[in-house]
Length: 334
Image 1 (tube, helix red, strand yellow):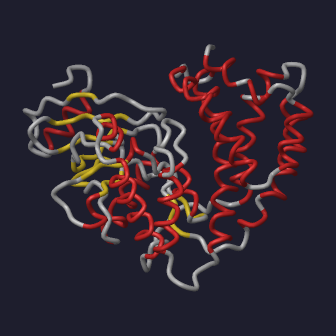
Image 2 (cartoon, rainbow, N blue to C red; image 1 turned 90 degrees about the vertical axis):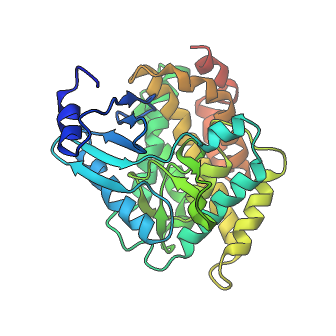
């Protein structure tokens, strides 16, 4: 038993688990914590500082399971303490499996199929989630202004950079406006996906950390999966998985060129945001480990800007932040 956590002890005792010996799992970029209950097939999720996110996890877990996808079942909860007793999917994350030389193509194909299932499921958006609006996308890009820009231009107030920056991006992201929205899980990457070998079909793909889900462009989660800030995919795998996804889109839903353009556009937005997020995690939150991914993120950002045809944004960066293309090493080395 964790001796310095009486709330956790009391919560477990109320549910007949007073003899459990919870083991804290490693944390991530959030304040959320998990404890494994060895031998019980259960986890305790603790999130007392984010009651909105906690409630969203409970709500979305039931919703995703009703759609035929695998989210951890919530067996008990204490909303006041931010504690929930949830199903334990084990340790077979995609990241662990890929690190042990599992079949990369098969794992990504399963994840793409799960996304296609979600995007085609009737009632997928019939759940209370925030809207991923254009203003939200722009607010995310201000993270770049506030945390990346000062490292290269300490003489330039971030607000001076940000005003033209947001105007350029508002125009660039225009193709996203008015599009039908789907349920976007937002953190759809290998550390939040698990292989559940005792299940069948798309239910074999276990989903974690979906409490920040929004209603937004379908292609966003596809970018999160196939343009991962943490790892490189095998050559040709991204193109193969894009082809697989496009084949699953119902006929007449959209033209394939439009899907691909939004995919590249969202990739550019996402990588640019992350280029500001990782320095923020280092400087504000004391989590420097993410800086080692900066060279990959900067490369992905440049590739996506070109693929999306965002030459005006590249020109603005070249003019206001000379050397930005080669700045990754400055962050990665601290």
